[in-house]
Image 1 (cartoon, rainbow, N blue to C red):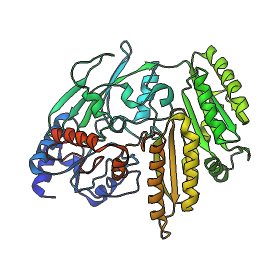
Image 2: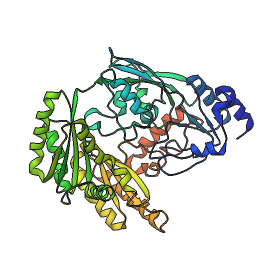
Image 3: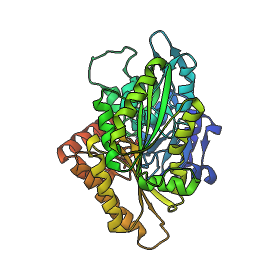
Image 4: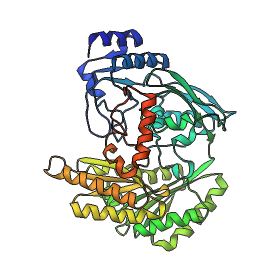
Length: 458
């Protein structure tokens, strides 16, 4: 990159907050997709004013800028696919305030999700969105990708908790969207437009978050079924019984086998599907809810049930779910984690379709996810060093997306589009809708300098 540009960046953020060292560039060249693109420079701004100056300069010089949180995305949304500037928000990591009276908080984008959850829980409040990456992913990234998690079935996704934002537009303007009130219908809803826009429409610099009272207690259950159909019918039956659990996680037979082989965890051989069910609320109500759930699911092929009586036993149950990802590496070294979502009642049909695709291409595909909202994490496991495996995986992924769409679903429930799903956009969105989206992008970013080549490609 031109040394003149480097000097301008150093004047904006300080010399020690700009790097072109190759080792540093490599650190910011990848995310969870295992793909790698080397930036030309990495900058660490401290506030919205500095970001505004960087974007104004980038517009004048036509230099691409790639915003980045923790880099934990699964679709390449933060990858610097065209070199240019990687803009990291990790310095903006303050919880500015927690307002217990009005149940709102204001934070900077670099706050780690779990640290924020713990901070609000200390004062008896609750921030439900809980992506699997919560220990390291940042709230700014969560908003940009509209992250989900196991608790979505009861509490919804990130955008349901975002009341307002401070955003730097691609042209360098600093704008406020939304506000702090629970209601607000003045003008277009730019807050919702920014949530899930994957860093292509603006860089988030402050977030106003809606909070809830912290549930008094939780109760966790592990239920093993002799078929995926039984587990799926159990999900519908529980919700049909007017109980909305906080989480309704499922694992298919292949996933159970992976966990069993990799960890030695004792799970019955007859188990073909698992549900992890957690209810929360007032303590005296939970025992009744748990028993009602067990009564509902019992006729549906239950092999075994385990009900946690203590927080430690609850942790043991969740340990089964957390062992899934590390166990998958035992299957094959390379994982393509897709996150399709189908109507809840279509989960068994979708699992059968995936099983047929796995058999057709002779590659392992492991399924687990959030059964309560039909969000299935489909993991295509291959060894890229084996000739032909990558081509098989590519074909299988396209067929999986087609099957999900045929069932009335979507190819992404929570990971977003980034670069990995962008080629498949025409399978899901009609040309007129894509044209309107491109019009919005062009209006905000006429020079296409902010995260170009993502979501809609160009």
